Length: 448
Image (cartoon, rainbow, N blue to C red):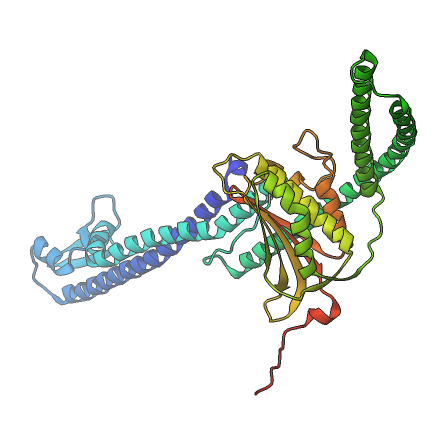
């Protein structure tokens, strides 16, 4: 049974035993001291009375002699050896101390002390329970934290103000360990992702090459077929003319499908073998007019209001202009796609904003581009997967758009973040500033 006892129960019994022992020892010592004092006083008084009785020639009644001795003495029985012998006339009387009467008198005299002792005992027991709770609660929280981490959860344990300093150090060490484990898990995820991407890239590279060769042949043959068909005289009234018109329609459909397949292969190749960015100074003010010209027709077609915002002017970043446009285009098209599936009751707006991202000390450290929409948001269960290659919720999607966007932003030395809710989604792109624009705030203004 002992090995199944909880630590809190064990400590509770230990502290209770210590408290009871201390109170019992203190109270017992005081009562023992009072008992010895009363007994010694009764013995001394009995010896004095014995000396007086030796000089006395007359006898007294037994009740008077016992009254002179006090309540702590009693007459000896037949088989008891007397502790005190008093001469009473021509005969002797034997007496013995009565511990029962001494204890009764002791309890009567020390009743307040006993009451205080009992109250102290109750307080000591309660204090023992409190101390055991204070000492074991941090350990229970640490044990709970270990179980949560073992199950893959993220845990941060707060300090308990009542706990000793050593438990604070233990809690800090546990939280540091939990953070290190999270970092290690993130590193493992990144390494695993890189391994998967490397294997996937190797496979896609060969697959894209094998697909592109037949596509090129099909394209050549289709062009030759189109030339042959166009060289035949078109007679709309004849059956041959109707068949020729259908053939041209089929050739057009094949042409569109080949173009779509070629775009998919191009996306795969750009994911597998991304081109090296040509980094130069890019003025973000020039990005917004390009966004209006490229995206406004598609937005208006879906009933979406496109709004461009220049939060800060003259922001210059180091980036590849073409890649930056590709990132904005991809994010904007995704936003338009998500809002096109909403009902007419929602106010559909697409915001593209540019500006500075400060550090909080008056120093501009990054330029940012924000693409925001008022769509339904991204469901919580898939938010951690939206940047994974080939993950898509659209039937006609390849699942490479956001993955390529993240790779481009990382290649430019920037960061990409996302926050979403039922009111819409924001994608924030942070790009390093050009050197001259990095510290464009006057930290030491001159007077006048």
